[in-house]
Length: 322
Ligand code: ADP
Ligand code: MG
Image (cartoon, rainbow, N blue to C red):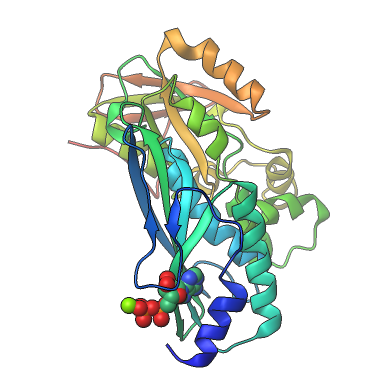
C-alpha cells in the first residue's frame, strides 16, 4: 500500500459508525468481529466490473448501490440479517469527485441497514468492485435451495423483468419517461432483506432471482428434487413493463425477456399451505408486493402454463433435470 492508497482508504472507506460486534475494522491485516453463539455466519461475494456488469456511463452512486444490493440480496435469499461487508475495489485513477459520490452512497446504504464496512483492498486497474457481505441467522432458520416440498406454493416478491426492460431501454436509447422506473430497477435493485429476515419463520426455501425466474427456480427444483407448475398469468409484471410491450413490441408480452434475463434481485420462495396466510400478512406488514405464481409438484419438470391453459416452452432456457 502506498500513501495515496492509504489516503483514499482513510478518506473514503473508513466510516465512523461501527457496530458493537466489530472488535476491529481496518488498520490491521484482518478485521475482527464477534459472532453470537446461537447464530450462524453466512458469507457471500459478488464482483461488478465496468462494461460487463454495468454500462460504463453508470453513475458512481448507482454502482455503489448495486454493488451492495446484489450481495445483500444473496443474504436475503438465505434469510440472513446483514451485519458486515468488505470492499475490494480497483480504480483506474484517484478521481476525488467519483470517490466522494461512491463513498457517500455506500455509507448511506450501510448505515440505513446498520451494516459496517470492516475492511477491504484498494488497487489500481480497470474499475471493478467486489463486495463481500456477511450476515447472521438463527441456526435452524436458514432458507435453502434444497428445501422445497411438493405441494408448497411458489411465491415471488415485487415485479419480474423490469431490469431487463431497463437495460433494453438504455441500449435502444429509448427516451420514454414511462420506462424510467425500469432503468431505476436495473441500477438500484432493492434487496428484500427485512422481509427475508422474518420470512424465515414461515418458509424453509428461497433463492434470489439474479439470472431470471426460469433459471433460478430451476436451481431450487434441482436441489430439492421436485418440479413446479407456474401460471404465467400470475407473474407480476409492472405497469412500465406492460407499457414497453404495448409501445415497442406490438403489444405482445415477451415472457423470455421477463423471465430469462438477469438483475431482478427479487426473491422466489416456497411456502406450505399452512403458512400461506402468515406470509401474506408479513408482506402486508412490509408493504411488499408478493405473488403466488404456482406450486411445487412431484414431477421432474418446471412447467409454465400460458393464458390459453397451454404449456409454454422457453426457447432460450429449457429446463429439465435428471
Ligand atoms: P494489507 O497490505 O495488509 O493487505 P492493505 O494495505 O490492503 O492491507 O489495507 C490496509 C487496511 O485498510 C486493511 O485493514 C484493509 O482492510 C483496509 N482497506 C483497504 N482497502 C479498503 C477498502 N476499499 N475499504 C475498506 N477498507 C479497506
Ligand atoms: Mg496484510
